[in-house]
Image (cartoon, rainbow, N blue to C red; front, side):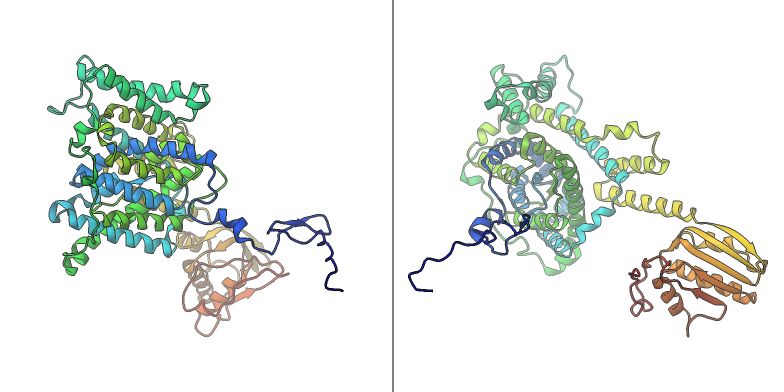
Amino acid sequence: AAVGAALPPPPPSTPVRGRPVASSRGAAEPSRVEDVVANSKSIGILGGLDAKKAVPAAAAGLAVSLAMVPEAVAFSFVAGVSPLVGLWTTVALGFVAAATGGRAGICSSASGACAVVVAALCRSHGPQYLSACALMAGALQFGAGAAGLGKFIRLVPHPVMLGFVNGLAVVMARAQVGSFRDAATGALLRVTDPVGAATYGIAGLTMLLIRYVFPKIKNKALKKVPPTLGAVALASMVAKALQLPVRTLADVAGAETFRGGLSVLPKLGWPTAGIPPAHLLSVVLPYAVTMAAVGCIESLLTMQLVDGIVDDGTRGSTRRECIGQGLGNMASALTGGIGGCALLGQSLINVESGGGASRISGMSMAVFLGLGIVCFAPLLGQVPVAALVGVMLLVCQSTFSWSSLRIMGKIPRLDAAVIMLVSVVTVVEDLAVAVLVGTVASALGFAWKQSTSITASSSDDAGSKTYAMNGPLFFGSATKFAEIFAPKTDPPEVTVDFAGTRILDHSGLEAVNTLADRYGAAGKTLRLRGLSSDCAGLLSRLHEGGLPPYEVIESDPSKDPVYEVAEDSKYYKDVPVPKPVS
């Protein structure tokens, strides 16, 4: 063609700007052309930034930042450090974990579960050791996330989850009772006293506003205000206008905490400096391991619950959540913080306030809290503690699984016992111990139930007998499996059909070979039918020199089941993985 000739128009199937186009068949085909500019909105921490989601998410973060203050202050007292340490821990940990964690909507802070773990370390060696513990715990969590260990949270049964939320609701509610006690005597405030009446009244007013007033507001502008934020603000104004004798955040944490200004900013530093290496291993590391485990478990369980509540079609990443918590704890340690994890109560406040769809909510929580400490500390310090207690009491009410009480008589007794056991251990001990105890109890109960489910039906023919097995054969049912057979009285030819069962582990394989040896000792032949090729190969390897003449495996690739045995020993490496016959 001549140089000046016009080029023909592109055919309909030519991709333009990386968008899918219709093929000649009329169906949409994905383009193989990547457009970095067009796709750049999905790259990065925030993804596609939607203003319609960003504004409610930021407002939800503001509401959660208020609810974080009493918790961070209280957990600071538990750990034995200044309230400012807990507040700046929440800022550093909350921002980094929200930006890099497993899903949107989760809010992290200094936590009671972690504070209880390290309180003894702080008392014996000082706050510097506590920050070093947070740094090491964060490194361990990062390593666990990089190794993919967070996936094992799926082994936690549903009854354990129910017991966890019930116990956590009780623990959170019990923590709020302290706000209704007299600071001097420790006795519960009486409604007839001015202080008691004001405290109960502000807490009740906040709960009333959140539950019944703000959800029914029709004004479009006011509907964008999270109910928790609006209720706390309105209750604070009522308390100030009426000059009610209620304790404020400044009264609890001290006026020094809320003096504001740049002087309250944390100082960056390496927390392990000055600590002997021997102490890092012998003193700090045991606490760090426990703190890392507690933090990961609580954060991953919180993520699972938020997944179910938000129900937006996405699932949080256990790997990223562990990594995010690890990075957040390391960041808090560099600011002299105490570390922490995701908080279920504050995460629920965030989700219910509209912050479950964007990471901006968790990040803005940290930003608003940091700005509040520096710029608006005096105003923040005037918020009544009773207003925040009202918020937390509603969170406790929504956290508790009331349906678990209704189904107690309808579910298996083992599941009901696990729910109660985990709830009690969560209240008495801590979350990590409760989850471990509940998971072990559920696993043992499941193993016992399965061990009693193996059965057999027999049929006699001239000079032979056939056993048709049903149920799983594994370590728990191996003894009952052996009791089914009678080698001394059975005929010379015995066939065991395993089509209705599955041999699950090494104990099951040994049980089959032991049974064959019993029949061989009686001078009889045992024929095995309905085994997967995996089982057949492993049974042969378990015998030196192959199967004995009295143990015969009848193979039928067209009918035999296809499955693998949970066996990882020297016998398994040269046994091919079973595959279905095409």
